Length: 572
Figure (cartoon, one colour):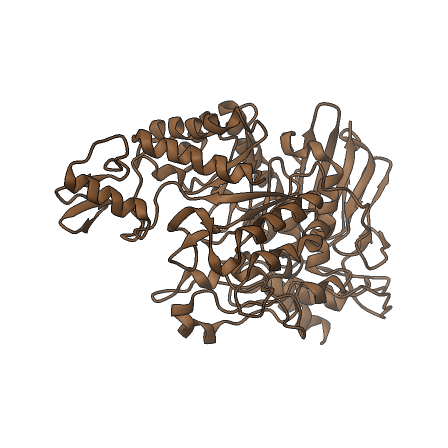
């Protein structure tokens, strides 16, 4: 390809490069430029997120991605072997789509357990399992029985085996706890209806466990002449949180799973406990925490609160220490990880966005912390918008922030999945994990059996986790490096975030400070190496994520950092 044509393509992709006068090419420039172009393309374009090792390739005339002359790296991400024992990196798993141990096409507990070493290699210290209770649906968010496991996934013995195995690897396990509503097929719902009709108010009555009415209301569905509240779907009747019997049952549920060794819970749909009533929801959340903290003081809670920022922060007044931050995820339209990685938001602006979030959280709860993520099971995959080097950059940014960040399974291989319009299904956002291009052992089938009509339209990555592990600078190995760096600094979870103004739209910088440690994190948001004066901010380089295979330098207070790379320094 001639230089003028290449320059035009790069300009169209929003990539600014300069021609090298010395004629020396940055090693692997063709792979780097190709990935950068892919990252800047439309959302309909995908790549597996891999990048080949970069090798020296002199040329008489070339594009200079290294104008400050940084040394070329080894073509791999060096790991320090940081332990996950005190880490805070989390990973969410939809068991049905993760790994199948018996060849029936359905992911199960044994399959998930077999990937424990893989999760540990990513630096994961906590796994969130999407609903595992018995359920009539493929997704499990309408629970038939809160004290049993989904038979498709195995037995309770299989589950406790997974717990034991993960704990031995330093990985905690939290369960998705769906308390806003149950399944319409839950025996409690039918019993509540019968008690209501019979007027049974005795000590064993479940009459008030659900919100019944003899007339229709907004958000209510009909059942045998009565109406019941069901804000999500008619198959999901809402619990009555004012019922003493319901509250007692919630405690029994949590006590049961905690007694088996579960480490905590992800609380689903917390803003719907009392629909439209933030104060009552905050009180209900604190009650849930208080009910188990006395017996299990180290129990972990994180809440799902998909809501506007103002009301979002109000929930930190509860005793739940953390909530998923949707405002920076793929679902938001302003100042997100995706936008900063793609260059639509400057580094300084995004650093201020994070500082604002952290400030609001700490104002409500000094011990509270954020749970950042790119996308989850209710959203289109982040690979819809991020590929190649920019997928790596986004990972470096969100995984090196305070709190407990969450990786959605498959994100580390660029797994695809978008719901689509009209007859689409969220199952398209929960597609099977790919483990290998050639060996399909453990690969699951399409998760929603009554929507197999959608399966033919799925276009998925070809290379799986085991393939990408063999490629030194792949997206998977990038995630391993970022996890290794995060675990190197256990204080990050509860650290104090302070934005640093770089006055350079291609740089994002901030400090993270703990009781006895303080680091400066600098991200290069561009594809070319940059020099940045840190003489008043830091004294030495501690570690780096050399995404463009260029070794950072620090000379006379000037930091040299490669394209799309990250440097961690000892802050002054």
